Image (cartoon, rainbow, N blue to C red; front, side, top):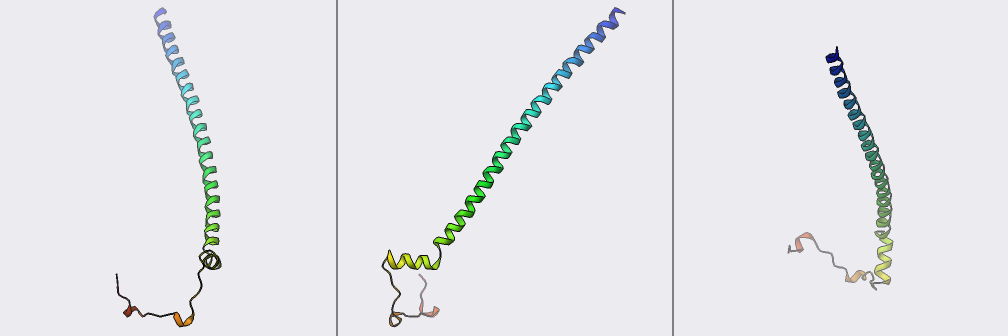
Length: 99
């Protein structure tokens, strides 16, 4: 009977060690999952902020590219003016030579 008790004790110790190892693996996996979830939330927050900035930049671009804005800059800052109708020359595609 002594021999059967020793085998059982050894088996119980092995099973206890396996249980502890599995428990530690579960804890490590949960920690990793939480860490990755925090990183996911940070990446999603950054994506939302970049999306908002993209919208602002598109609005700014459309403002800077407005015809009235370009004409204002051309007239006041570059001192440009539309030519007189007599100075305008229209060319047909046949008159233009490729470079």
